[in-house]
Image (cartoon, rainbow, N blue to C red; front, side):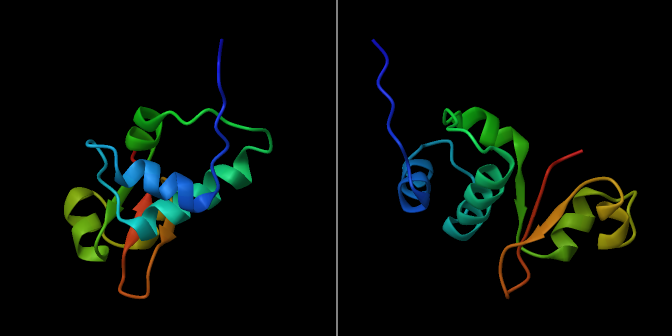
Length: 97
């Protein structure tokens, strides 16, 4: 028997924050929830490992550009992947490439 638990945004954030492997802030998890909800119209199984490997959070542009030294600007990074701004403080979320 399979049981399905439907998660709203707060449930998703709490589920991920309580996972010992979590590397995301609550703010980034809210953005991830919105992204996943937008690209998946149907119900989706929560696969924490897929979430973990599909996104990477950075505190600011400098931290991101330090990881992607072959890119000189955020625009260069955006030529390779999508960059989401997750806060007014400069936080960023990307799909690693």
